[in-house]
Image (tube, rainbow, N blue to C red; front, side, top):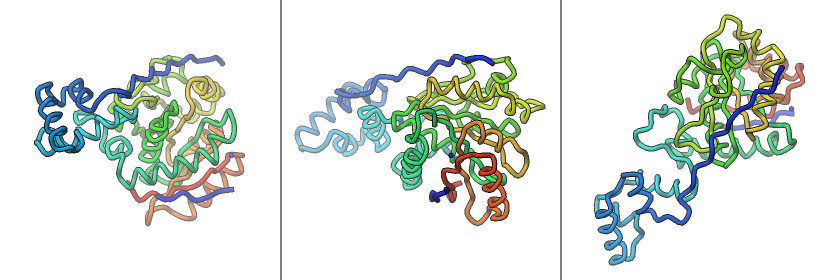
Length: 300
């Protein structure tokens, strides 16, 4: 994926999940024993082999057949406070930033994150929201939004991912969340801050799913309550990534982009319509939204 340059009711309290302690000062063996990935006797066996052959603990464990590459990566992620999904996590494998943090795809996402920090999030104290938009369907908006949210949280930014696609939502599936409570409930007064869910295993990341599909998504997003909700959430989060429906099918994406203040456009390689993208670009700018860039998505 590549990033291209482009010429930016009531207070609703929210609770940000507390940040768990990292593994600073703990050995790899201790971390793996605590996680039930290794027994105490196996840890001792590896430690003795490690000392005898003067090789790293992880390499010693793999040589003895007691550790896997996944075990070592997990322990290192805990030591350095870097979120990493465990093997039995029920989160979607499409969340490559969490499952494959060393892959080339995720390196591209980190490069995109750096550009977005420089072009938007670090340029003003109130610049926290970013709408992920595309002209058509099946262009990878949800994939980009979810994985961007993860890499921002891995940077230590308190990150919230909002699924504002209340027509065909996907984030609840990616993160294995209940669909009943979410954004639609908060905007209609039927849900409170409990709808914002901290993601186990991914510190600093929370998700507000779309919730039950309402009959009037455009009206809910168009009300001033949505702006107030974003403002309230911004008091507890550093970065707010917002997934949207395809702009060619409804005006929801434009509304969300205006509320967020900025948008990132997603296009799919050998798939997206150039005329549709041009119309979306022009219309977003006409609404005064900062178009911080565009992503050519070839990863989903």
